[in-house]
Length: 175
Image (cartoon, rainbow, N blue to C red; front, top):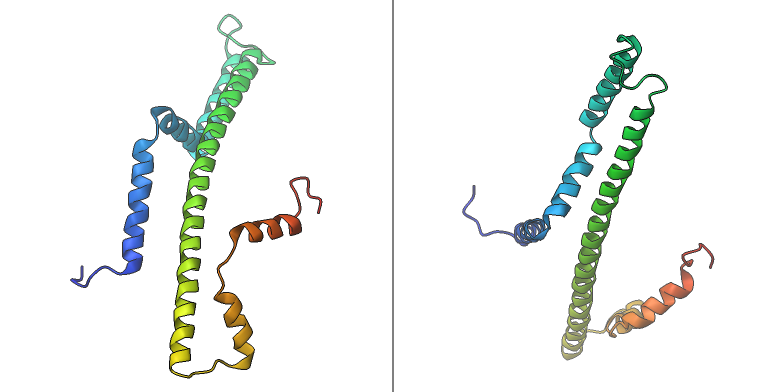
């Protein structure tokens, strides 16, 4: 490991890791259980366990003595168990997806805030650069003059949002 000071990227990575750890620590036990079940249900191990169980279930109930068969063909109990499991797994997956959507919304809000701050900072930098250029009697290229003027203006996020809403298709897919 080098003795050089951490870079901005390293600091950002550490900040992101810290935010993720805090979010994980703040999650409820039910969210952690739901996530664990969703991860397991989405694994190859889950598929292999089910294939083994279904084959054993069918083989037992097809090949065992009639007095030992607990769910003879057409396997009504197996159908019930699999249906119940499907409902429960779907519910756990939805819980995990809802939690992930909330986390994504939080990240989007943070990203929007950082973007707005960066835009405000750049507007200030452009204005300062224009004043420096004026003091040094450095004229911008004619092609850059109008663009630099527009970029130096503050951005109205409400106007941008209205323009986006006007141009983007609505939820139903219509313009």
